[in-house]
Amino acid sequence: MKFDATLSYSSLREVSAIAQAAEQIGFDGLWSTETAHNPFLPLTLAANVTQRLDLGTAISVAFPRSPMVTAQLAWDLAEQSGGRFILGLGTQIKPHIVRRFSTVWDSPGPRLREYVLSLRAIWNTFQNSAPLSYKGEFYQFSLMTPFFSSGRIKTPEIPIYIAGVNAYLCRLAGELCQGFHVHPFHTATYLRDAILPNIEQGAAAAGRTRKDVALTCAIFVVTGEDQDEIAQNTFAVKSQIAFYASTPTYVPVLEAHGWQDLHGKLNSLSRNGQWAEMADLISDEMLNEFAVVAAPADLARKVRDRYEELLDRVGYYFPFEPNRHDALWRDAIAVLSDR
Image 1 (cartoon, rainbow, N blue to C red):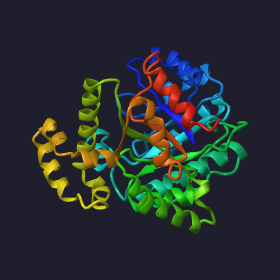
Image 2: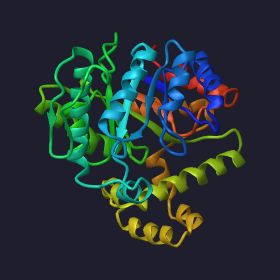
Image 3: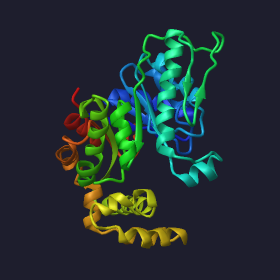
């Protein structure tokens, strides 16, 4: 298993120091997210100041960018990092794609399949000067002159990880991708009974196995040095669980435990902006299914016991900050990283 960090920053000026600290303390990888900032830009800075860390997007939203734009970004990062870059892609959900990005939402699963295939076609043209020829339902690429080609690099095999919750994207990852970003809103039961069987089904259809697909996740954890800190972390994680449980996309995870009736209540509260009330509906039983709850000294061991047969890479669902929680990070690296 590998233990990774999530990058958090308010200014790009901070990224180099954070990346250096993450490598020094011993993380295996550093993931950037597409929330308040572009996910690719900080990784160019991290690549310049690190030598060992895997660097990836977790995730970059696919559809607002043409595959050609993403292909160039990934190619340059793969070259700059010496092959340490991992391209993580996600579909997002319809309201964000349509209303935040002003982009078309249409058949997201099949569209993401074509996205992956067209990336590989573009990269093949970059590396081998092959004529660019990809024709699908959603994407068509047929023009690449030498002036616009990114050209050959030493590390052209860029891993693609996709994110998802439901069956189609799990099977797609098994069939076409090198990895799968498991959503933090999951349980071990859902991993065993829904995600892994579908990944295995997709892999088998392509003559691959589960071992060809690395499963990674920033998992919910609740810990703290005293009761006040534990209470704060508990409320924060329950709030996050409630937020995801209020979203229709994630209902299948609730259904795996017979908790689907909770979705309607949470969805109604979210529409009214009653965020604090939402957290109150998450029971301690639910918290312990969605999160690993433990004292700092026991946390890494409990994470290992829950996930060592299910995930290949793990991180905690809170950002790495240099010189904060160092003992917690070092313990997790010692227990979970296989380096």
